Length: 286
Image (spheres, one colour):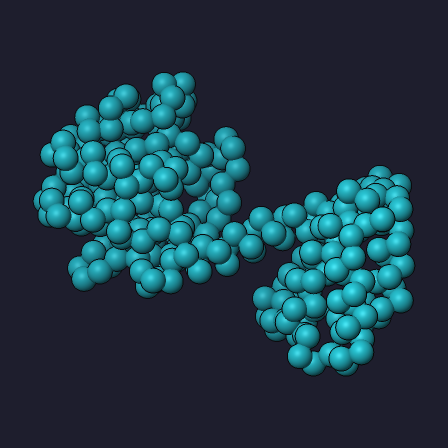
């Protein structure tokens, strides 16, 4: 299969490498900065570079739209308007929160369309296709398009999971919280330990975080532990007193994370203790 990549960013570059390893022929890269296109050409043989996206689809069978989410609909409309796609083409975008609607004009040309999103964060400069091996992908497609879309994900080393069109936003919100919110919690914990003059916070946090996440993935909210879950008002109050005094810039983050921890167990907690925790967590730092 001949592939055109529209958008030579982190995801586009990694997918180009993964597609080449899967035996596909990446024939074109378009959009983005010229330096980014040239970088991709330097690591994937036989790729031609185009500034205009419509020029890249000639001779391609699969078109991967790896542009920013807000640009997908405009790029898709331009491809349809310029006659750059049609029957014989398969057009896929990789945005998590978007379904098939941004590709509606493309679908009207007779091209197959799908939304295929890898549930994996891709760091800057990533070129190792093993990063996508075993990763779950959220796939939204209809009719016969679902079959080839799932096969595409499998060829790239991933595991496809159908996501209904009307569930894409919640699906992506869950992943965003799982990635960025967890990362923010770890960053806050790291800063607190550094404030405690611990030079290697990773030695304390890495095993604790790994086990905590594994437990919650297995057992859900009932695996949560710590002073908030125990209703230990005194410890939470002490935490807040010292944080407000020594590292007040972390106070809001501690309170927000504690409130998120409290939310799933509110209905099971003693009302008096719950009221005390709510009072503490609603206060702003002094």
